[in-house]
Picture: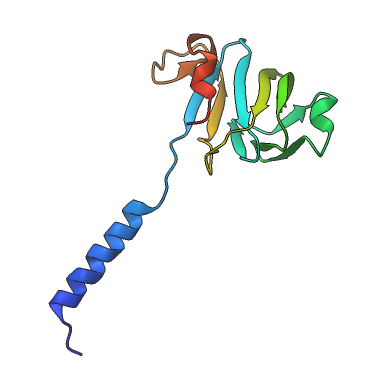
Length: 147
């Protein structure tokens, strides 16, 4: 079978362009240092929160309303979606080891909402010196707004 080198080059370039055009998301890593983590959601856009182990969300009465908020949790990842705007609600995420991580959730409507949100990985502070991790007490609430 004879191959045309020109068409092979075009196929390789097209594949490379397709792969680089695919959306990728960085994962923001935060360290729980006993400081409440503020998180502003965008109505209708799912937010993923990754934890090191299994986690059980403890929701307020307002967030238990299926017309306002949707939550699913599996294998250390929590998928949350605000269905309507709401003011700050303190939410407890109970880890498998019994510890709690506190997150202040709020939700707003945007005229031009993003299609996805940057996933967030939340780690428990183990007293390490990894400066690449962002302690919860060293960032301001604006860092958690959607792009």
